Every structure is written in structure tokens, then in C-alpha cells.
Image 1 (cartoon, one colour):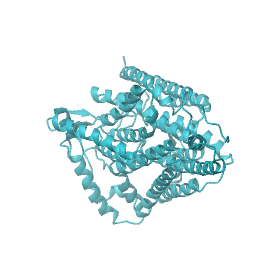
Image 2 (cartoon, one colour):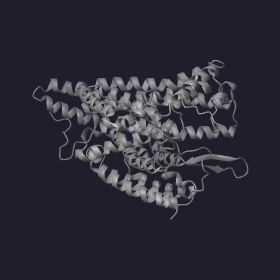
Image 3 (cartoon, helix red, strand yellow):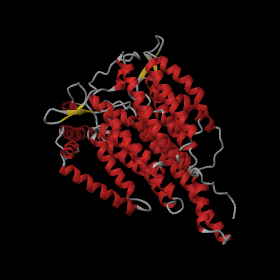
Image 4 (cartoon, helix red, strand yellow):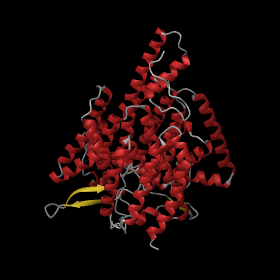
Length: 546
């Protein structure tokens, strides 16, 4: 049996079990059963098409037709988009230029999703009448300014066709998800559904990642040859080796590399702060949580581990009930520390930790040297940078055995290519999104605790992202996800403003109708402002009744 078909059998067995376990917890509050099953069935269908199409172009055509038929039934296009974002790796192929130019554009699974799911939604939203809101407009200008700066800088060295490809990629990969997310998500319930859909996509990856690490076999890389795609020019089987010569394979699954896999599980871990609040039954809910944490561990990526710890600490230390959550975290931390100090298995975990571990300290040293050498290059063109910084002699000492300079720091990459001006434009949207999310979360904390938890999860995940990209390149899914999280934070702030205004109105109604109880008022605020669906068996509160 061909290797990729053997890999498919393992993938289907693992995914079937995971989807069955995750259905009841994720449909308890975050999404409806029909939506869950539609997205699950699409995941299986796209996986089967990928493994049996024997051509990447055939996959794009068949998958595009299927998505075009089914996507119209989904009420939340962003949730559908993120649930299918990691079905297959970020493979891409060039559309031929028919002899006139080398190629027109590059197409990938991610861009197919954008064209078939998000583009029709964006066209519909473009012609809808919506109330004016300053939050998306300000975010539009900040995000747009950074993208325009990239295009203008590239225009100084690239051809017209190269600029067209760049604009095409930026529009599909970054702007289109941002636009649809900030315009289509109008309730806290829709936002929660997007977070749950992302968690679902990562939950499936976790056990598959554990299988890859245990079997030392990257199962999705077996698709390259059957799909007619060239093999990677550098080694993708990366072993986190110990001093004794042993070690474990760093799992990739469909993320493309282990750091990107750890990065995705980091985001999902933070979003469990709100998605897991109402998991029922609890046993299956804890299984879902464990699947995400298994993926985080299987990546063997120390940057995401550190970022996840900091982000979770921030997430549990804010909002109502912070003292209780911190007490639980301290208890779990004490038990974990005792385990690591008193058992051989715990010492193995310590060896893999950043800064204190003994496994591959050279990766930390490389990042320190990269920063020092990059500063020499940066001060040569501090204001606007240089797109040819990779050819600067000061960076030659960082060239590795594969002949590449691994720019494992997204901030350095932006600063060297686009200068301090570009770095400020890159950071400004994130600073704005964090501040807007923080303020919205604080304003609605007493009105709707569930919506406050949603804000904490988004805020913590964006903090974790900003930490981890200091030790990772902005490649594959990494920029797509951090700009999507930026868009979700903006959407949360916009919806949070509506929740807060609804709360003020409800308080005014309470003053005018003193016979109404406080519990009735709060229930009305939570349902009307956040639009989180009531739990199964619970009647929805009536609007406008005193």
C-alpha cells in the first residue's frame, strides 16, 4: 500500500475518534449540532479529496466545487473558514502565465478558502447598510497603512507582475479575513463560535501530532509526491535531541513546521479560557482540553510553551474570579513542580524547557547572535530599512548548513526590511486592538461575565502571539492567524460597545420599572447584548418585557 494511503488510514481513525469526543462539549453552547456536523463532514471530505486526487490542481477544483455548494448553508463564514484552515498543509502551486510571464499567481488551500468562502461574504457585506462605528474604521486605517507601506516598498525593487502577485496575496491571505471578521461578527455568540471552530481545528491536530512524534513520521508530508508537488529543499524531520543521543521528532501535522504547530496550539489553549467554560459532559470536555495540550507538547517548541504560560497567567489574572483562578493555577503549578523535581519523567520535561533545560541550548544562542548581527544591519538603514538585508555581509555569519539565514524573529524581519517606520506601522494595529479589547472587557465585566471571559481569552492570545513571534518567522499560517486574531479583537470591542449600551439601557429601564428584579435585568442584558445562545433546556429571556 502506498505510504500516503497508510497515513490516511491513521489520520481517519484518529480524527473520527476526536470528532466524536468533541461534538457534545463544543455544541453545548458554542455552536449548533448541524453547523458542527457540516464542518466535520467537510473536513473529512477535503481530506479524502486531498489523498485521492493525485494532483494538487485536481484537489483545488474538486474542493472548490464542494465548498461552493456547501459554504452557502453556513451562517458564519469566518467560523467555517477557520474550521477548515488546517485541513491540509500550506501547499501551493503557480498558475502558469501561458508563455507571456513566468506565472500569474500562487494558489493554495488557504487562498481557495478565501476565494470560495470569504469573497462572496465580503461582496454581500459590501452592499449592506451598517451603523457607523469608529472602531473598525480606525483599525482599517492602521492595518491598511501597514499593507500599503509593504506594497510601496516592494514597488521600488519589483516588477508590475510581481506587485500584482503581492497585492493578490495580501488581499486573500490578510485583508479579506480581516474585513469579513470585522463586518460579519455582530454578536458575542458569533465570536464565540469562531473561537470554538478554531479550537476544533486544532483539537484534531493534537492527537495526530502525538502520533507523528511517537512514530517519528510526518504523515501529511506523504502527500507531496502524489499531489505532484516538489519535495522541500531543507530537512523537515527535526529531532529535538538530548545529550545522550536520544530525542523526539517535533510534530508538524498540517502546520508546516513545529514552531507553527506550537503557535496554533498556543492560540487554541488561550481560547479554551472561554470555550471550555460550559463544556458538558465534563469528562469529554477535559478530553478536548487534553487534546490541545497534547498538540502543544508534541510540537516540542519552547517559544510557544513559554508564550502559552505567560498568556494563560495573564488570562486567568484578570476579571471577576481572578483570585480563585490564580489559587487553582498555583496549586497545579506546585504539583507540577514537585513532579518535575521528584521523578525521572519530570526531569526529562525540565531538560526540554527554555533557558533552564539542557536540550539544544544552541537554538537560544543562535537567536541571541541573530539579534546582535541584525542590529548592525538595522543601523545602516534605520528609518526605512532595506529589502535586500539578507545579502548584507554582516549576516553572513548566521548562514546555516542548508545555506539559509533563519530569520526566527518577526520583529527583526520587519525592522530590517521596512525600517523603524515599518515596524511602528506593524505594531500599531496590535497596540490598538489590545487597548480596545481591554477597555471593552472592563466595561462589560459586571454586565455580562461570559462576554468578559471572551475578551480575556482574546487579549491573552494576542499577548501570547506577540511573544512567540519574537522567536518565529512570519511564514505559512503564522501571519494569517495573528492578523485574524487582531480582527477578532476589533470585532469584540465593537460588539462590546453594543453590549455596554444595552446594559445602560437596561439599567435605565430598571429605574423606570422598579418592580423588575435584578436577576431578570441581568439575564435580559446578557441575552440581548451578547446574543450568546441560551443553554439547552433553558428558555430565552423575552425582550422588552417589564
